[in-house]
Image 1 (cartoon, rainbow, N blue to C red):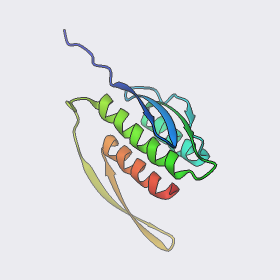
Image 2: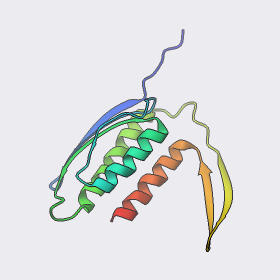
Image 3: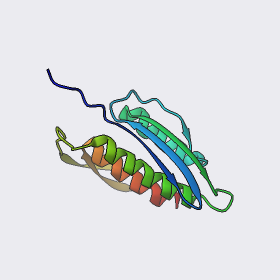
Image 4: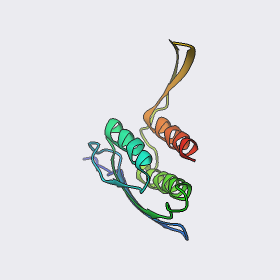
Length: 132
């Protein structure tokens, strides 16, 4: 009989600027609580957890009275660490990519559809760039 491995992790990160706790379940249902102190980041993480069916809890106390960037940076680092722990030895993961050109009014969008885990990492990276 094969043993089912839970792909979950909880990571804490404490710096001079932030205190963060992230819990992730990669085989979840899209539930979780997001309290980053940055409303737009809450919204973007909600999209990832809901559409990716990842249970994600993020609690951050940061120096947002100065700026959001410490919270955004450290949350991205902490989610990445939790994701890496939860994914474990990466057995059973298959990578694929598909390129698509989408013409829209006044722009041509090049979309690369990649496997979900790669897309998640790309979204977190872009999210940090957009918010900072």
